[in-house]
Amino acid sequence: MSEMFTEYEDLLTVDEACEALRLGHNMIYALLKRGELKGYRCGRIWRIPKAALEEYVRGQSGIINM
Image 1 (cartoon, rainbow, N blue to C red):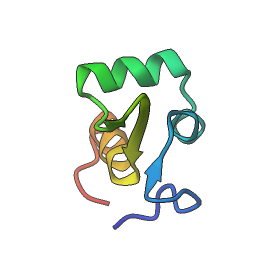
Image 2: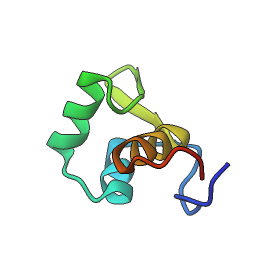
Image 3: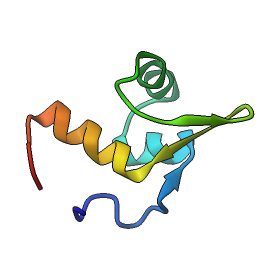
């Protein structure tokens, strides 16, 4: 696994994803809704795997392997 986001737990909240990606809440929710950022809902709360953040960053930057 890569060295990105090492300071975060394996599952992140929307607030933590916002902080890690430096994006606003509306953008994170839009990415989740479009499936560009993978996550799942546990009741009303979204949980986002750290690996999904890494996948999103690699996809946006065009980096295949890290």
